[in-house]
Image (tube, rainbow, N blue to C red):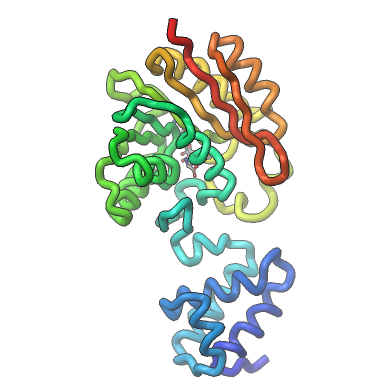
Length: 282
Ligand SMILES: C[S@@+](CC[C@H](N)C(=O)[O-])C[C@H]1O[C@@H](n2cnc3c(N)ncnc32)[C@H](O)[C@@H]1O
């Protein structure tokens, strides 16, 4: 079919091309706005504007990739999280809105003014950078086992001018400075390795290293809950994101390793998705 070159025509065409997806309208607008280096409001304001042939060709290319399932965030190379815009790459997870629940929870805790904070499996740096943006006096560290993720998190720190956050490569606690933390946060891999969920949507294009963790999805969470205890100050908190069906197992793990004050936060679907517990003072 011949596509005309106005914004409205291009969007109409793309909407039809992407109609099998979850959000054809939104996807089409985000992709075209990205190519034009404009906002989606601009597209709505100037529907009759004729775009250059090169824009049309690039748009057709991105729509074709989206049709194959490529995440919009990979196609435009960025994703908004909390109040920040983060670069994303296929090396790690695309930050998810539900992880903002963890950030929100961490910010509600009572911690020392110059709290030392560790983000395990930092990926894009989403959690570490959001916390640092809200609490400039906190000393925030982020680690990831994937070198490309560490470099990405560092670029995101520069992009958002949050250069007080330190990122390094470490397999969980293996290469951490020999220090204790007031708060440890983590959104670790927690999907069951044979989950049917891995064959759907964006996760098909994200690395297994960011998603799966053994047959019950709990291998990394078990390690983190056990090891964090020795890396927390007395009275320090561990806050962890998990699957909606893992809350009970996590409560048992916290109890097994002598944490206290277990709290669980529910998402908008009323599913428990974040658990937190404290290392006792004595
Ligand atoms: C679910 S993603 C979370 C990324 C980011 N924190 C977020 O919330 O968007 C899990 C991250 O843990 C990292 N990871 C996996 N195994 C790890 C390990 N053994 N040590 C450190 N990081 C690990 C992955 O590379 C990935 O970036």
